[in-house]
Amino acid sequence: MIEFHDVVRRFGHVTALSGVSFTVRPGEIVALLGPNGAGKTTASRIIAGILAPTEGDAVVDGISVRADPQRVRLRCGLVTDSPSLYEWMTLRSYLTYFAQLYNVTDIRPRIAAVTALMGLESVADRKLGSYSRGMKQKAAIARGLIHEPPVLLLDEPATALDPEMTQTLRALILSLRAQHRAILLCTHDLDEAQRIADRVIIIDRGRVVREATTSELRQTGRPTYRAVVVAQAPAARAALASVGITPDNASEADGRVELRWTADDPAETNTRALGALIAAGAKIVSLTAEERSLEEAYLAIVAESRS
Amino acid sequence: MKKALLLARHDIIGQYSERNSLFRALLFTALPIILVVVNRGSASARGSSDVLILVFALYSALLPAASAVTAAAGSFAGEKEAQTLVPLLAAPIRDIDIVAGKLLATLLPSSVLSAVSIVAFDLAARYEFGAERVARILSPEILYALVALAVFFVLTLSSWVMVLSSRANTQRSAQQIAGFMIAGMFIGLTALGGLAAQNIGSDLVLGVILAVLASDVVALELARRLWNREEAIARV
Image 1: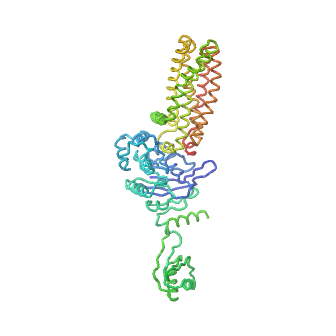
Image 2: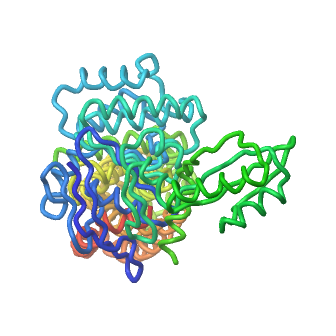
Image 3: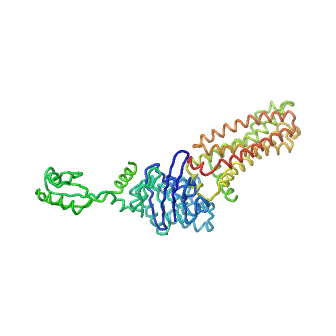
């Protein structure tokens, strides 16, 4: 549904995107993750037909952004971090205006449908300036959906929303995925990406540095193991050192020592570690494989790409 | 063109839904009557005061137009400031329709305001300075020419203002740009109006109209070439 082929975008001497490629299929939420200035907004604006790529092409629903940006715009709904509303208008008049711009034929039923979806029917005739931040963001999403686009581009949509509203928005995005829309979520909110995205594309300095599912990302790098044992910390450390394992971390509390180490070959390393600890008189309470948080994985990937 | 009209209608309602813009427009439209009242004594005498009546008529046509241009400049940069420009640029509307819509949004209300203002001035001047004298100075041709001049004046200014304000980032700076341009054009037109009044004929006014019309062609072409999504969005 969205195909981004080797897209390069330059603004004067600044290269915002440098040979970026990815796809988003119908019924899929893909998170474009990256730090500020990574090129996420530029990518979403190219897909939305606002900016033209300097090189490469973006294809939306089979239509090239280069060849026919007008038709591409008809197929995209764009929601940005700022609701960007005309606050002097009522929601109904605002949606009517955009429905006309998008050549929507059955305007009334469409407005009824999107206001119902957003839970804004009762305030549709109130001026947008009187809405709360969360309601404004819902109104912006209603605008993005007024023409039933198969592609939805959400650029930091949860910025400045309270946790309750963020949860509502999350449920809404998931319901839109169920309608087989291709959704590109540009964000630097790892928690948001982790909760709703099917796939994550990490972008940094205009380049894609990793593309994977969230669970795949967490598994990147060497796996970490955490053992809790009843022993003295120096003795436990010495036992591990005797079999060539240097723990990353060792903390002691209530007579228990918590040890962390990484292992390329867990079966071999963990057997050696536990054997040495038992031989040193330690009692094993637990051994668990630690999954990295998405944040840790993300930071490690970005750091790796920069080095 | 349908979308340009839609956009123009939307912008006009937006501009004049703001109390300040509405007040400013009404004030500038009513200004001719104030000019007549304030200059009762000086314009009542014959001779050079005929020039004054013609210059006031020129002001009556141009002041409301200038207020409309300022409002339009503020509206365009205001859209950027409030970030409402991004959804508009993401909509399936051609660049040329956006330019045409924005220009119409300035041109239509300013033309109406100029026409109302000049009619108000004509009536007030007839009442104060005598119908016969005013009819001689402000012949129907002169009145039509002044309204046409106001329309062309707005077209030139709004084209330039549109190009420049798409590069300004705040409403205030866009209005300042518009203010400087209006002031410059006013000085030039007042000087030409004064020259025209020496003959109390329509020839020189016609010349001025043609000069402004030529400037319109250049400004419109520039607006068409220079204004585009890429440039506007790069600055949002």
